[in-house]
Amino acid sequence: MGFAFYRFGVFARFVKFTRFPVIIETCGNPLRSGAGKLPYLQIGIQKFVGYKQIKQLLDKENYAIDAKLPKKAKCLSQTFTTWVFSNLNAYYYYFLYGDPNNYEITRSLYAKRTPFPFNFYYPSSYQKEAQDIILVMGGFDINDKLEAHDRDYLISKAKKCVTTLSKRLDNKIWFFGDDFSEFDAIVYSYLAILYKTNLPNNPLSNHIKGCGNLVNFINRISRDIFQKESFNSINTNKDGVDPNDPLLTATERQFLESEKKTKILAGIGAVLAMSAFAVWRGFFKKFSSARQYYDAYNTDDMMDEEME
Image (cartoon, rainbow, N blue to C red; front, side):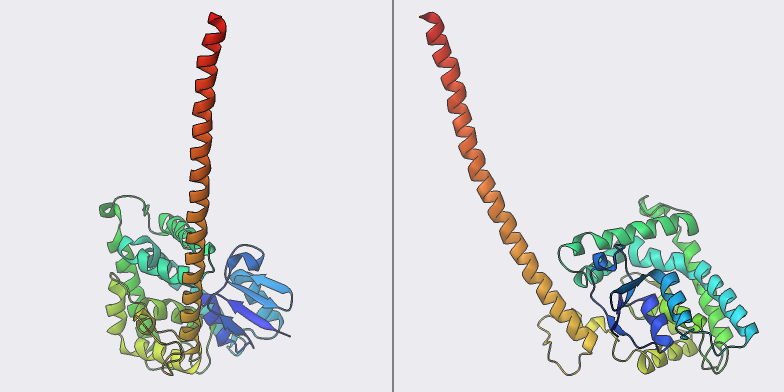
């Protein structure tokens, strides 16, 4: 039975924590999910789309992420997960998709992992989703002038949350002791992206860096659980990177290959578009000339006929 998981993000990290036998694809076509969305988990011909469906499947298949936690810890895990969501989600969406200085980078990263021509549409759909989230959780519209963006509110909430997380983790391996939980996966999903993604404007990155235990938490999970899927944008931002470079991870190599394919397809698309335009322009010129001749013939000949 084949397993494939598309879109390496929050949900991919959740699945990997459960040790569910899955192959993560970092480049995927959202249309293939059947719902036009990512992420989705495919088993044979069956597809499970979104967090709720995927989590229900994992629980059913005895891969529940909180399976080893005592009952009290399970309740705390769910409660803390809701708390982190309320404090970090708006910041996450704003500084990845709402901040105009950052959006070009995140748009490019998503576009390079989405097949042509869908890479022109889907990044903007993520920004539209971010607009709705920020409007509800942040209290402002990202389409308003930059001065109206209440960044301080988002930053303050996010920093307090990170500080509390650092105190809660202390010197433990996991937040609830010896066994990982859904809460560990959620915290890692937010912090790893906000800490490791190179963005022009990301005040929380330095704040996370100042919490040594959280940095160790992020690096340990990246090394132990996501070594094959790890992605270093620094490597692939360099011009002329060799896809066969042994220092590249499998994900980085796949990214470079997909980027090359995207450029080729974009080039072909541009040539076809220009060719179609040239043909249309030539046809339009011929049509215009014929129409002018027809109009001239009508007016002049009709006047002669009437005079006769």
